[in-house]
Amino acid sequence: MRKVLLICTGGTIASKKTDNGLAPELTAKDLLEYIPEIISEGRISVEAVQLFNIDSTNMTPSHWRHIAEAIEENYDRYDGFVICHGTDTMAYTSAALSYMVQGSSKPIVVTGSQKPIDLSNTDGRQNLTDSIIYAADEASAGVCIVFDGNVIAGTRAKKMRSKSYNAFFSVNFPELAVIRDGKIIRYITPEKSESAPVFYRELSESIVILKLIPGLAPGILEYLFENYDCILIESFGVGGIPDGLLNEFSNQMKSRAAEGKLVVMATQVVNEGSNMEVYEVGRRVKEAFDLMETYDMTQEAAVTKLMLLMKLYGRDREKIRKEFYKTVNYDILYSGN
Image (cartoon, rainbow, N blue to C red; front, side):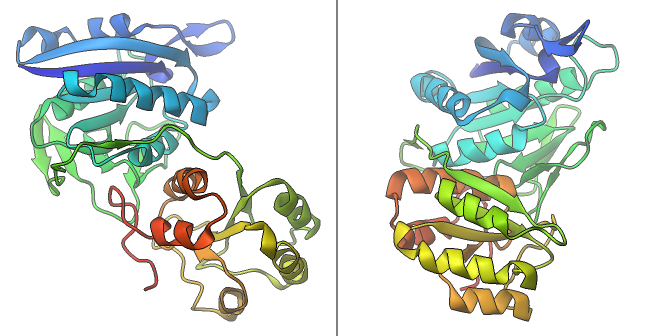
């Protein structure tokens, strides 16, 4: 019998209607009562633990640390793990866990639902059932999201729909598998590490995303450079700095060079990634300054990976750059090299 630990954190799947809208109220024990079939089959043993019960809008790096700790403390006792989570920040959590629990030969599945599990038309029961099936399978490994029958690498998931059941897409990478009628159809079989997983608990939170809009006032740059160690710039298209921001951007990059600030260029476009070499607005900046770009990574993966690397290597930008472009859980295919 395969043993799975269900780690509950709240989210829509555990919510009930209140006078102020949906709020997480169901416990881990309550959730299991909605999927008695998989328990009664006798092939899988599921135990549950309640870490907290929050709307995922309130998820923070501190919560990620508690989840990673729960996995580490129970790692030798179970064959797989399922984390029930709200959908709004699920992609951030799955990416963060991909870096905080590296090289896991056991599956760590993140799931949830678009409607509470106690509703008749919920997607929660199917998502939870599929997740347990995937977590109990001997061929599964690593961090992933299981949602609407799709298995997505933890670093490649993005929530693309706010209400529909097929809310999550795999960005710039194929889905690992699909689950249909309780059967796993694999497209990519995860490689299982022969070594013990490496757990990390601490992340730097001194990172901010600047989303460019046409006509953005350059004064925002001084504030961001002063208050954050890492600025991830979501630019237009394949990446660049518009003329209206260029002078202030150059001033900040030059005046704060000794402070070890990290500047990382990303794109607002979901698919196909960045490439600052294509246009003058990108190439002139990349050639003039020591910055990085995310290429085909998701925003969620880039942010959480940088959080870990900044904590591990401080202001050693060359070490951070080297490690940033090493592939972890399928997070990057192209690094411009």
